[in-house]
Image 1 (cartoon, one colour):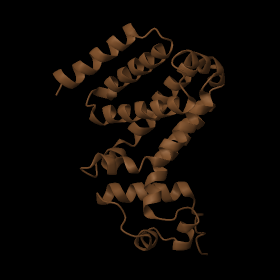
Image 2: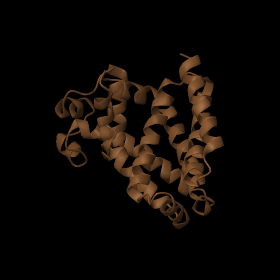
Image 3: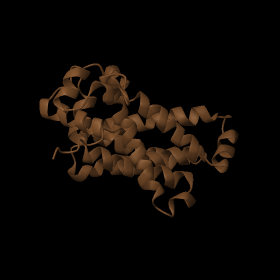
Image 4: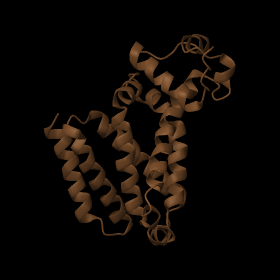
Length: 219
Protein backbone atom coordinates (compact mmCIF):
# COMPACT_ATOMS: atom_id res chain seq x y z
CA UNK A 1 0.00 0.00 0.00
CA UNK A 2 1.46 3.38 -1.02
CA UNK A 3 2.27 5.88 1.70
CA UNK A 4 0.01 8.92 1.55
CA UNK A 5 1.94 12.06 0.68
CA UNK A 6 1.76 14.71 3.40
CA UNK A 7 0.00 17.96 2.59
CA UNK A 8 2.29 20.86 1.80
CA UNK A 9 1.61 23.97 3.88
CA UNK A 10 3.19 27.39 4.25
CA UNK A 11 4.77 26.43 7.59
CA UNK A 12 6.21 23.19 6.16
CA UNK A 13 7.85 25.06 3.29
CA UNK A 14 9.32 27.55 5.77
CA UNK A 15 10.64 24.73 7.96
CA UNK A 16 12.24 23.03 4.93
CA UNK A 17 13.79 26.34 3.89
CA UNK A 18 15.30 26.93 7.33
CA UNK A 19 16.63 23.36 7.53
CA UNK A 20 18.21 23.62 4.08
CA UNK A 21 19.86 26.95 4.92
CA UNK A 22 21.35 25.66 8.17
CA UNK A 23 22.49 22.32 6.77
CA UNK A 24 24.07 23.83 3.66
CA UNK A 25 25.22 27.14 5.12
CA UNK A 26 23.54 28.79 2.15
CA UNK A 27 20.08 29.61 0.80
CA UNK A 28 18.34 27.40 -1.81
CA UNK A 29 19.34 28.52 -5.30
CA UNK A 30 16.10 27.82 -7.13
CA UNK A 31 12.51 26.75 -6.62
CA UNK A 32 13.09 23.76 -8.89
CA UNK A 33 16.01 22.36 -6.89
CA UNK A 34 14.39 23.14 -3.55
CA UNK A 35 11.09 21.42 -4.36
CA UNK A 36 12.79 18.44 -6.00
CA UNK A 37 15.01 17.91 -2.95
CA UNK A 38 12.00 18.02 -0.63
CA UNK A 39 9.78 15.86 -2.84
CA UNK A 40 6.95 18.24 -3.69
CA UNK A 41 6.00 20.12 -6.82
CA UNK A 42 6.77 23.65 -7.95
CA UNK A 43 3.03 24.19 -8.33
CA UNK A 44 2.58 23.43 -4.61
CA UNK A 45 5.33 25.92 -3.78
CA UNK A 46 3.70 28.66 -5.84
CA UNK A 47 0.42 28.16 -3.99
CA UNK A 48 2.12 29.92 -1.07
CA UNK A 49 5.14 31.84 -2.37
CA UNK A 50 6.15 33.62 -5.56
CA UNK A 51 9.93 33.43 -5.08
CA UNK A 52 12.54 31.90 -2.79
CA UNK A 53 13.21 35.40 -1.42
CA UNK A 54 9.60 35.71 -0.30
CA UNK A 55 10.03 32.61 1.89
CA UNK A 56 12.91 34.30 3.68
CA UNK A 57 10.81 37.40 4.35
CA UNK A 58 7.88 35.33 5.56
CA UNK A 59 9.93 33.62 8.29
CA UNK A 60 10.24 36.74 10.42
CA UNK A 61 6.57 37.56 9.91
CA UNK A 62 5.73 34.06 11.15
CA UNK A 63 7.80 34.66 14.29
CA UNK A 64 5.58 37.66 14.98
CA UNK A 65 2.39 35.72 14.25
CA UNK A 66 3.44 32.93 16.62
CA UNK A 67 4.29 35.53 19.26
CA UNK A 68 0.85 37.11 19.09
CA UNK A 69 -0.81 33.67 19.14
CA UNK A 70 1.04 32.80 22.35
CA UNK A 71 0.20 36.14 23.96
CA UNK A 72 -3.49 35.83 23.15
CA UNK A 73 -3.64 32.42 24.85
CA UNK A 74 -3.04 34.22 28.15
CA UNK A 75 -6.50 35.17 29.48
CA UNK A 76 -5.00 38.19 31.27
CA UNK A 77 -3.26 39.62 28.22
CA UNK A 78 -6.24 41.58 26.87
CA UNK A 79 -6.51 43.52 30.13
CA UNK A 80 -2.84 44.60 30.08
CA UNK A 81 -2.01 48.25 29.47
CA UNK A 82 0.02 49.14 26.37
CA UNK A 83 3.37 49.07 28.15
CA UNK A 84 2.72 45.60 29.61
CA UNK A 85 1.57 44.30 26.24
CA UNK A 86 4.71 45.62 24.58
CA UNK A 87 6.97 44.07 27.22
CA UNK A 88 5.14 40.75 26.89
CA UNK A 89 5.52 40.94 23.13
CA UNK A 90 9.26 41.60 23.32
CA UNK A 91 10.05 38.82 25.77
CA UNK A 92 7.96 36.28 23.86
CA UNK A 93 9.27 37.37 20.45
CA UNK A 94 12.89 37.12 21.55
CA UNK A 95 12.27 33.71 23.11
CA UNK A 96 11.20 32.54 19.64
CA UNK A 97 14.23 34.21 18.03
CA UNK A 98 16.49 32.53 20.59
CA UNK A 99 14.92 29.14 19.86
CA UNK A 100 15.91 29.74 16.21
CA UNK A 101 19.10 31.74 16.85
CA UNK A 102 21.32 29.76 14.47
CA UNK A 103 19.06 30.53 11.52
CA UNK A 104 18.32 34.13 12.53
CA UNK A 105 21.99 34.96 13.05
CA UNK A 106 23.01 33.42 9.74
CA UNK A 107 20.17 35.15 7.93
CA UNK A 108 20.72 38.63 9.37
CA UNK A 109 24.49 38.54 8.95
CA UNK A 110 24.69 37.05 5.47
CA UNK A 111 25.62 40.36 3.79
CA UNK A 112 28.29 42.87 4.74
CA UNK A 113 25.75 45.54 3.84
CA UNK A 114 23.31 45.91 6.74
CA UNK A 115 20.66 47.39 4.44
CA UNK A 116 20.56 44.16 2.40
CA UNK A 117 20.16 42.15 5.59
CA UNK A 118 17.28 44.37 6.71
CA UNK A 119 15.42 43.95 3.40
CA UNK A 120 14.18 40.55 4.50
CA UNK A 121 12.47 42.17 7.49
CA UNK A 122 10.00 44.11 5.33
CA UNK A 123 7.11 41.72 6.05
CA UNK A 124 7.94 41.77 9.76
CA UNK A 125 7.96 45.58 9.67
CA UNK A 126 4.45 45.79 8.24
CA UNK A 127 3.07 43.20 10.65
CA UNK A 128 4.75 44.76 13.67
CA UNK A 129 3.42 48.22 12.83
CA UNK A 130 -0.07 46.72 12.60
CA UNK A 131 0.46 45.08 15.99
CA UNK A 132 1.53 48.39 17.55
CA UNK A 133 -1.51 50.13 16.03
CA UNK A 134 -3.72 47.46 17.54
CA UNK A 135 -2.41 47.86 21.08
CA UNK A 136 -2.22 51.66 21.09
CA UNK A 137 -4.75 52.68 23.73
CA UNK A 138 -6.89 55.81 23.75
CA UNK A 139 -5.13 56.89 26.94
CA UNK A 140 -1.78 56.67 25.18
CA UNK A 141 -3.08 58.59 22.16
CA UNK A 142 -4.18 61.42 24.45
CA UNK A 143 -0.73 61.58 26.05
CA UNK A 144 0.89 61.74 22.65
CA UNK A 145 -1.40 64.56 21.55
CA UNK A 146 -0.28 66.54 24.57
CA UNK A 147 3.35 65.97 23.67
CA UNK A 148 4.05 67.82 20.41
CA UNK A 149 1.04 66.34 18.59
CA UNK A 150 2.63 63.04 17.64
CA UNK A 151 0.71 61.02 15.07
CA UNK A 152 0.05 57.29 15.24
CA UNK A 153 2.39 56.74 12.29
CA UNK A 154 5.18 58.19 14.40
CA UNK A 155 4.40 55.73 17.20
CA UNK A 156 4.62 52.82 14.78
CA UNK A 157 7.83 53.97 13.09
CA UNK A 158 9.51 54.71 16.43
CA UNK A 159 8.47 51.31 17.77
CA UNK A 160 9.86 49.64 14.65
CA UNK A 161 13.23 51.36 15.03
CA UNK A 162 13.30 50.29 18.67
CA UNK A 163 12.64 46.68 17.65
CA UNK A 164 15.47 46.81 15.09
CA UNK A 165 17.88 48.17 17.70
CA UNK A 166 16.86 45.41 20.09
CA UNK A 167 17.43 42.73 17.43
CA UNK A 168 20.88 44.22 16.77
CA UNK A 169 21.68 44.17 20.51
CA UNK A 170 20.47 40.54 20.79
CA UNK A 171 22.60 39.47 17.81
CA UNK A 172 25.69 40.88 19.53
CA UNK A 173 24.76 39.60 22.99
CA UNK A 174 27.06 36.85 24.31
CA UNK A 175 25.77 36.83 27.90
CA UNK A 176 24.39 33.58 29.45
CA UNK A 177 20.74 33.06 28.48
CA UNK A 178 20.97 36.46 26.77
CA UNK A 179 20.26 38.09 30.10
CA UNK A 180 21.69 41.43 28.90
CA UNK A 181 19.06 41.51 26.16
CA UNK A 182 16.38 41.08 28.83
CA UNK A 183 17.82 44.07 30.68
CA UNK A 184 17.98 46.04 27.43
CA UNK A 185 14.31 45.30 26.75
CA UNK A 186 13.20 46.32 30.24
CA UNK A 187 15.19 49.56 30.24
CA UNK A 188 14.36 50.60 26.67
CA UNK A 189 10.62 49.98 27.00
CA UNK A 190 10.52 51.74 30.35
CA UNK A 191 12.44 54.72 28.97
CA UNK A 192 10.18 54.95 25.91
CA UNK A 193 6.94 54.97 27.87
CA UNK A 194 8.19 57.34 30.55
CA UNK A 195 9.36 59.66 27.80
CA UNK A 196 5.86 59.72 26.37
CA UNK A 197 4.56 60.44 29.87
CA UNK A 198 6.92 63.43 29.92
CA UNK A 199 8.77 62.04 32.94
CA UNK A 200 11.83 60.70 31.16
CA UNK A 201 14.94 61.75 32.96
CA UNK A 202 15.64 58.87 35.39
CA UNK A 203 14.80 56.10 32.91
CA UNK A 204 16.63 57.71 29.99
CA UNK A 205 19.76 58.23 32.11
CA UNK A 206 19.58 54.64 33.36
CA UNK A 207 19.13 53.29 29.82
CA UNK A 208 21.94 55.53 28.53
CA UNK A 209 24.32 54.27 31.21
CA UNK A 210 23.47 50.68 30.32
CA UNK A 211 24.17 51.20 26.60
CA UNK A 212 27.40 53.11 27.34
CA UNK A 213 28.65 50.33 29.59
CA UNK A 214 27.82 47.58 27.09
CA UNK A 215 29.22 49.29 24.01
CA UNK A 216 32.28 50.99 25.53
CA UNK A 217 33.52 48.76 28.32
CA UNK A 218 32.52 45.35 26.92
CA UNK A 219 33.95 45.57 23.41
